[in-house]
Image (cartoon, rainbow, N blue to C red; front, side):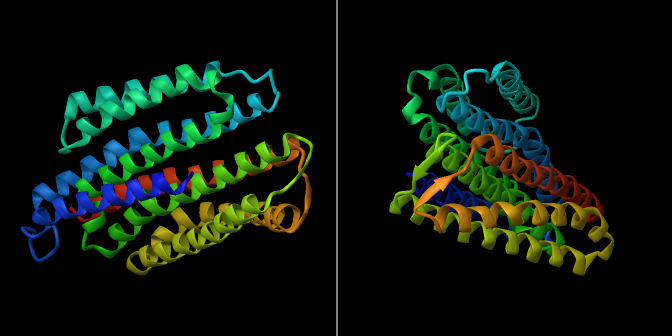
Length: 301
C-alpha cells in the first residue's frame, strides 16, 4: 500500500536528475555557473513555500484518523484553512516566478488531488489513511522534483549537497515515516486494546528500521556540513539533538509495546500527542535545514 508512492517518487527523481545533468555539464570548474546558481536559489524559494503544505497534510491525516476512530470533537477548520492557504500561497508564487521547468505542469494535478482529498475524505472513512498517505507521497515526490530540477542535488559544494540531501530527501522521508507509524498505531488500537496482526508487525518493523536509518543519515549529512564550516554546528545540532531525544521513547514504545506484544494497549490520548511531538520536532529540523541551505547558497555566490 505504501511502496507505490515511494517507487513513483524514485522514478520522478531519476527523470529530473537526467534532465539536470545537461545543465551541470556546462558549469565552471567550481561546479556552478550563474544560471545554475539562480536555479538553486529558486529551488529553495519554491521548497520554502511548499514544505508547510506537506506538513499540514500530515497533521490533517492524524486528525482525520482520530475522527474516524470516534473523536467527534476534532476541529478541522484551522488545519483545512491552513491547507487552503498553502495551496494559494504556492500557486501565487509559481504564477509570479515560473522559474523551474516542469513545476507548473506537475503542480496543477497535485493541487487538484489535494483539493479533492479535502472535499471527500469523510465520505470514505475506511480509506482515510491510504488516501491521505497517497496524497502526501505525491507531495513529497513533487518536492523531490523541485530539488532535482533546480540542480540542488547535483551541487558540487559538499555542504550544499549534504544539506540538499537532508532537506529534500532524508528529513521529509523521516517525518512521513514517523507520521505514518503514529497514525497506524492509533488506528490499530482505536484508543483501546487490540491484537496486532503479523502483517502489521512486519510493516512496523520495516518502518522502525527505516526510521533509524534516516536518523543516522541526517547525522552523516550534517557532519559533512560541519566539515566544511564548523560554525554550522551551532545552527543545526541543537535541533537534531532534540529530534534524537524525543524519538528515543517513541521508538522504544513501538519496539517493545507494539511489535513485541501479541495484544497492544496504547491509549491514543497518550500515544498520539507524544508521537506528534516527535513529528513536530522533525518538521522544525526540516525548516531549519532549508534556512541553512539558503544561507550556504548565498555564501557560495
